[in-house]
Every structure is written in C-alpha cells, then in structure tokens.
Length: 465
Image 1 (cartoon, helix red, strand yellow):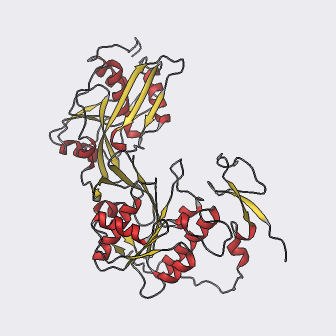
Image 2 (cartoon, helix red, strand yellow):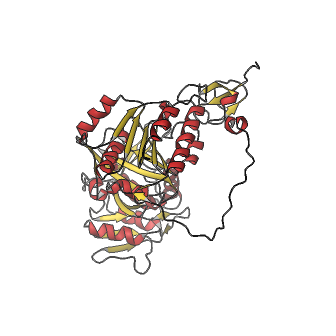
Image 3 (tube, rainbow, N blue to C red):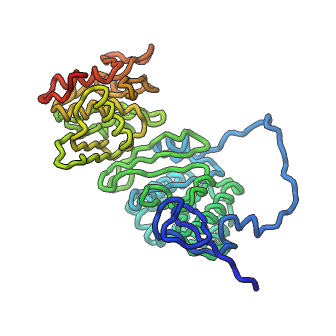
C-alpha cells in the first residue's frame, strides 16, 4: 500500500503549504498550521471521483424564470435581513461571537415556523437534547412541534434529513462540530468544515429545504474556516453586539436573494430576543443632551434610516504619542478627519488624546458620518455642547469640503419623525427636505468648525481657519 502524502493547512485562512511553519505566511496567524492527509485536502473530491462523461443539459437564457419561494418567519427584523424570509433550497450561514444569541434567535425562528405548520428540524452538535429543551422552555417555545436531534456525523445527519417528508427548514448548530468519514482530519479543521458545508449545501439544492448553518467566529470577527465556505452558501449573516449590552445587530453581508446592507435590531431580554421596530429611539434613549462631544448622526443601513449618537472625548495627552481609541467606526477614517481639521481648518487637535465611540454597539461603515464625527470632536475640544435637536451627516473631502451623500431624504424624514428640528449637512437637492426641519447647508467644514468653536470656552482655531 502506497504511503499517504500529507500537506499542511492553516486553520485560520485555509492556506496550503508543503511544510509546517509556526506562522502562516498568508494571514500572519501563529500556531494555526495543521498536518492533514493529502487525499483529504483541498481539491481531493474532484481527484478521487471518476468523471462519468455525461454532458450537462443546456437551456436558453430567455426562458421563463420562477420566483423564489420564501417561508416567512413573522420575525420582522430577521425577515428584513433575509429579504423577506428563508428561500426554499437555499443555504444560509450565520456567524457571531459565543453567547451573542445565535442559537436563541434560530430556535425562536424555528418555533415560529413550526407553529405555522412547517416541518422544522433542529440539529445541535454542541448541546444535548435536554439542554435545547431547557432553552426552549426559558424562551417560552417548548410546546412548538420542532424536531430535535443531537448529532455531528454528516452522513447520519443527511440520512435523517432524507427520511420521510423533506423538511422546510433545517438548522445545523454548528458546522465546526460536524465531521464526515470521507475526511481523516479532526472535526473543526478547514477540510472538515469545507466538506461538511459542501454536503449540507448540496442537500439544500437537491431537496428544496432551507438549510441554516451556524458558524463560530475568530478573534478578528470572521467566520472560522476557509473563505470558500462563505462562497458556497447563498446568504451570510453576522450577529454583532457587545455581550455587556442588551442590543444585538443582525447584519447581512451576502445575500443572493436580497439586499446585502440590511440590518435587524434586537434587544436581549429574559425571554429571549425581542424585535426593535424603531432602533433610532432605542439608540438615543439615554443620550446626555447637555454634554459636550455628543453629536447625533443620521445614517442609513440598507433601506432603514438609523439615528445614533457619536461620542467624542478630546483630552490633553501626557505622552509623546497621543492615544487614538475608536469603537464602532473606522480608525483610518478618524485619522483622515483629524488631518483635514488640522490642515484645512487650522484646528490644533493632533497633540491630544482622542476617544471616539458609537453609542449602542452599532458599527458605522459609511463616510456620511464624517461631519458628525468632526462636530463631536470640535464640541469636545472647545467644551461647546451641540444643540440637542440637531443632526449631522455629510462626507468630508480631503480639500476640506462637505459633500452630499445618498438617501438624504430618508435621513431628514427620520430626523423630523423623532422631533429633531435642525439638520447640518451639505447642499440638498429638490425633494430632500422635510416640513418642520431647518436645514443648515455647509460647503466647507471650516464654516461648521467656526460656528461650533465660537460658542465654546476654548479657542483652538488658528489664524488660517
């Protein structure tokens, strides 16, 4: 018998190397390279399978297409992120930190669909059936006709799913615990995760069942395992939030059947996850309107406008290199705004320690927050509280100008609905105003900086402002 050859695969990124090394050259992680048998490595399936030579059936592009059949969970926030519900025959990957609420959300969705007469199967590889029943009792869904199993062997799972009527929804919790006998490596390795996910995705396409796969995340917040797993599935959802806070954000980063920038907001309570229909009011509930360094940003997540509080603290630094701490925003974007304030507006701010936080645990990714961040920084630096009924949005350019952003009408209307009376932004177009809201338009950031600094105790603006 020929000796089996082996390769070395990084368990963090899936990079294949011919020899072991302490540090992966592709992702830079330490002690993540594991030896695996080559016949079970990446690409082993096509090598071991014999081609049948049967040609594929070709069809014209102009043929009639069928609309995607969805099963609605009646959970408004979950259905929003999915694009209207789970699509039959699709595979969805759900990732998130441990304890963030992935299993709780999916168990609630499974119970809701089972109560509608759908056949739902929940397979847990991390908990015993008794533990799942205890959580269901705490959530108040213990009487739902959900079928449970505690299994990690992929072949056994597939045989169970193929028995009887095809299920409408299958939940696998989690993919890192699954293993297949076709692979010799241990459960949780790159090859096992990839092969197990491929088998489950193939079952979803063949049977028409909606399959939801739960995945662990690494310390960087990415779903553990190779990126190819995300390419196999039809939708990828991330469950975000700080476990010390009650808010949870469900964000879609890939969706073949809907938008990829939608979010769902939940609140963790004693009975599980509760939907938050108006997240703007929730994020602004505890705002200190009289404190300097607090600005309200009118953002847009997908099709939903969301108002959040951006907090900034500028303090004298005792160090030669000032601190920069950012939570919920891009740190490189903060450096750009600081450079524009220094160079284009003449604000002496670079020698200070700067702390920036997006309240509520929400992560803001759009450049429209530049103006709100700049206003919060100048407010803290000059000890000048901003008007409590004002919101800010606009992109700051490197030349010191303020550029308009998309969906300005949604942002203005959301501000008016929540009782805000002043909007600070770039020049708005026709139809982007709301009744009862005064719009302050700025073409240059220096004009806004001068207005805020004039009301403060300190005067950090140079002669060139």
